[in-house]
Amino acid sequence: MKTVLNIALPKGRLGEKVYAMFAAAGFPCPSIEENNRKLIFENEAVGVRYFWVKPSDVAIYVEHGAADIGVAGKDILLEYEPEVYELLDLGIGKCRMAVAAPKGFTDSLDRTLRVATKFSRIAQNYYQSIGRDIDIIHLNGSIELAPILGLSDVIVDIVETGTTLRENNLEVVENIVPISARLIANKSGFQFKNAMIEKVLQSLAGRTEICK
Image 1 (cartoon, rainbow, N blue to C red):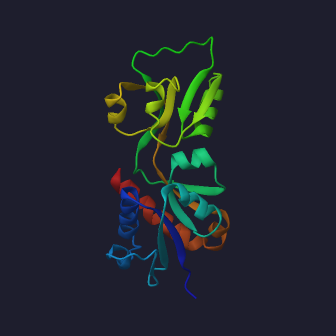
Image 2: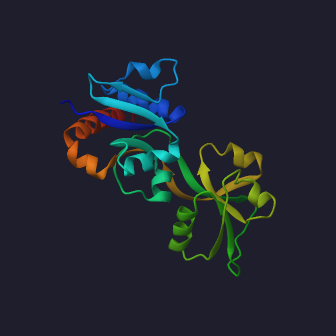
Image 3: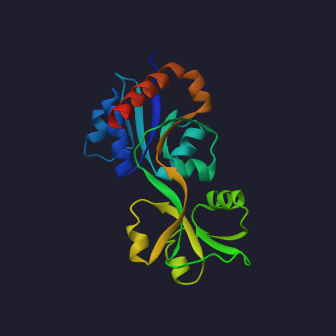
């Protein structure tokens, strides 16, 4: 019986780029490009089964074995620390995790720094590494509003072009870590479907070298 690899793709533009990489690497699935509302797309000939999920959920599907492999942003892996193998930096979806503040802001070390973020663990780990006391204000919406309205002193967030920051009179004051899309694997699946996963890994690695 042919091994079928279950692959979780992030919905949206990033996922479309990721699928294009898989297809170019020799793992296409024509039905995924059709205009339909299917959730699962399979190509038995090459042994792959794709499904679209919310980007922040990819690691959950992979960690729990519903997917053998998937593609998740490095931000998700750092924030949630899922029990998965990180196999490859795909070199797409590039951005950075950064600290931003109102222009002209200076940090006063005689008080606790208020930090607004969606990425509480990343923020905590970063400030702990430099020995700075902080209060984290966890938000899910527009983080840029927090310092403007006096809710926080700074924010920790993903920065791609910096346009939103500039339009709100904010600027990057510290870069924490570069972010990009990573190929991840379920730990058990990596053992039982190793040959197929290694085949995909090597093919994608070749594509990332071409794209560099």
